[in-house]
Amino acid sequence: MNATIPPRHAPRRPAGQDKSGWLAVLEQGANVLQSSGPLPGFDVYVVGLHCAKNDPAMQMEAHHYCRVVNEDFLQCVIFDGNTADANLIGVEYIVSGGLFETLDEAESGYWHPHNYEVLSGQLAAPGLPAVAEKALMKQLMNSYGKTWHTWHTGRHDGEPGDALPRGEATLMWSFNRDGEADESLSLNRDEAMRLDTAGKRDHRHDLVGLARPQHGVDTLRDAFRGTTPVEGVLNA
Image (cartoon, rainbow, N blue to C red; front, top):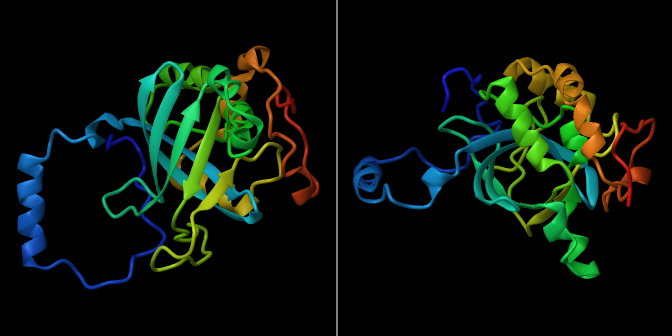
């Protein structure tokens, strides 16, 4: 991990005993023999905030490590932090607006829009120079994500989570208006990771002209109170 990125440790330690000797030997062997596996390609790091589609009060940080498959498709593994102790909590697939339009109506209901995350400054790529980060965000304009969380390990601002993955996977959704994400969650992340969300919003304002109305922007509108829209984030 880039040394300039502030460390974000997992908010929860999993249940179970500490590693024994045989695990250390196994890991050493894996480092030598299994270096050609798929994970080295997951080198695009972005951090955002997620909420559950069927329970919007369930919110948490989501640290994505993504592989850019092509211009229209990314696949990401999601952790609750960015250090060696981070827990794997889910996956996200990201498609361009063009690929989203190929989906049927039933399938499209699983995919959340991304324009608010980009234009509000909420989605960040820590460690990237500002120019490179903006280029990435431009690529994500009008895109959609299909995200499943398999483990709610809690929140860094104090809300406890589960010691082990429990129950069925949870379909996650995006925030689409100011005031939907818990202020404590947002401030805690920005302070700990030295992120300037307001500054990123200003820096990305010229991307508003690229924004197209997206499906799913109003899906959770009635689940929150006192929210305000953001320029360029429109429901299709």
